[in-house]
Length: 246
Image 1 (tube, rainbow, N blue to C red):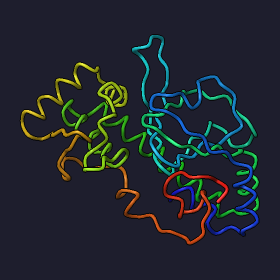
Image 2 (image 1 turned 60 degrees about the vertical axis):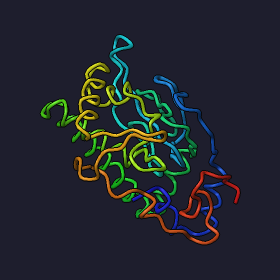
Image 3 (image 1 turned 135 degrees about the horizontal axis):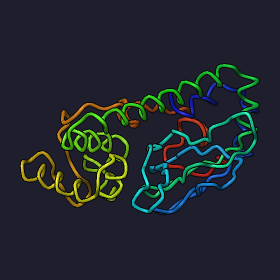
Image 4 (image 1 turned 180 degrees about the vertical axis):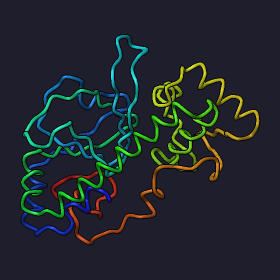
């Protein structure tokens, strides 16, 4: 399930109204999309790139990446019942990203009028929670190498490079933040994997074997997306995060 499926079956007038009410913004790598404690009335849907949600510890070294928000996925606060909320996490662009800012009130009204939209939205949220639970379980149970290997394989789906593998702009610091390890441990583990031929780098990405580890994610989005002729930017046909006013 991806966000465009939430609106693809709606009447044209309702889709057009949602498009009109939404805003598309572009963010540079490492730019803050939403700061912790900031109030917002928006629902954040990733059109392209990759975001990460960061929970802050008492010191800068205590910051933890709790999840990645990939293309066609979304970020929302703890409650959907109010038109605005105060974020408990910071949302950061892990890669250059385009993000749709959709009014919470508008999306909630669609859910009230179309129960199927609400059910699909709940399904997406539940899958995200399961991924987060799995990552917490792995942090507590897997060896360092197994944990790093699992994260690297996830990144090949979350941030694929043009030549395969994952985008080399995803730093070891980000991997450490997500895996609950220090950057030094991640660096040592990846160098050891590289020496043994399990990890390979080129000018575009970091490569791991396809069967290197299992993943919580489905096959890459490019293999699943279908195009609806004449679709708007919130419909499947918009592949590049272009203008909402198509």
